Image (cartoon, rainbow, N blue to C red; front, side, top):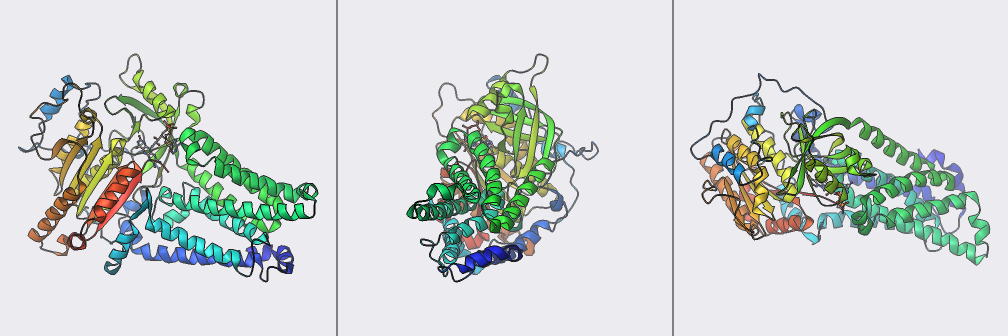
Length: 612
Ligand SMILES: Cc1cc2nc3c(=O)[nH]c(=O)nc-3n(C[C@H](O)[C@H](O)[C@H](O)COP(=O)(O)OP(=O)(O)OC[C@H]3O[C@@H](n4cnc5c(N)ncnc54)[C@H](O)[C@@H]3O)c2cc1C
């Protein structure tokens, strides 16, 4: 398309002595090259997509939130208590020590779900056996949050663009080529920055995992545009006609584009994202919109690329609107954890475990602009449950603090505060990775990262009940600051353990607290007398934990090996919390010997960090 639209520009650009080839053609072929590599990667990952979508229910889940009525007939009997399971009375007794308001026993999962029979999902390893060493190396962290895979992708992208910049051209004497590179990279910047990310969808990866590339290409565009502009400024200064040139409408539009790109960069820095996320978002939306209009007037040849960006942006806006639900929510403060539990009963389906939504609270209690803000939170409940969509929002900044304060001021005749919310999503999550296809799963979560673990473990229990899971062991490690953090989550965690008894999957939960307790320990001495739930001071030592899970998994496979199905199909490690936690888990997994990895069928780490 760009070829036909660029006839006039091609004539002018091909007439330039410094450039022997047409700039439009060079950047066009550059993008074709990038797309070929991209589709090759998609092709390599295709077996995983097939594995994920082999089950019909997967086609509908993870795209749009909805409400389904949970049939009363479908609800099963309460899970029977076994001798080695936790006593429910213990939990109720605790209400005298803890916050009785928050200590509401959860309904057991088996009470909430129906279990039609089905088959286990196929397991597709992330790479062919011969490449596992390379992949292990690639997962190593270079700097916090950045692995060698990230580095390799960025290096390849940069290499291709450098070739494109210097191919029969000298960007230092002829600034045109860099302008072309900048504009031709914009569709990638837009596509990778959208929540409804087509590239992520094809790769089977959440949009947030590709954010590093959005930023990286954005920086390439920034450098290209600034060098392109400086080249022209220099030329105009040499002929002493800067004012005359900049006053020309197309150059004024170019200057506006330059200001937009520089503003985008300036307000995207970590300083602004931390200081005011609202300023970061507002400048992003404003600059990206003005930029497209300015570029339309700057250079005719840029138009096809601008139209592509506009289409990507508009599709994203339409999908965001289509994915937004207006609902009533109940908010409740969980003091021990310093977070607000948001419960939306009228949205109870449509997401996949591990996904997040973006929440807007329409209430004057959120402050003057608080109600306009939209914040991402991981869904912590299981689909088709009676409590609906549940979020746990940690009090960290102004918005989450307003939410917490509002939750504390409950209504006159009701226990919990009701608010109106706009929920957008679901987004992100595990992509094409199917936890139920692994032999074992370890979750390492910090603070409010428990949301990720509760939704995924409950989902695994449900799948195990339906005979749709291969997972035999689940080890959940929750790192909190204070042991009392466990109190409000205890009903849910014990319900999970209780439900797992009905399945062929063993669930073990250990809570690590990192601060010394002040005053009375919140649990009676004999409370943790069963191995399924434990509490321990300090930080977890992941190496022995991983070794133990591998041992159990391998032993189980050997003892029960009656069919192919019983072969070990790998260990899934999910980590959710600060970047430092994710980095340390990656390092611990990396230290495991190769034979151990092979024994268990490979190890895959999935990380969810609350920010970028
Ligand atoms: C994919 C994802 C899932 C998350 N899930 C959870 C969860 O389940 N529970 C939980 O407690 N927290 C979660 N968070 C973090 C949560 O979104 C932020 O803590 C919250 O938005 C902070 O808002 P604030 O105004 O109170 O704090 P601020 O002080 O304004 O922000 C603190 C930090 O949060 C980030 N942040 C702020 N606003 C936004 C926004 N609109 N979008 C993205 N990041 C923002 C910024 O990096 C900022 O540095 C998640 C974040 C992401 C990206």
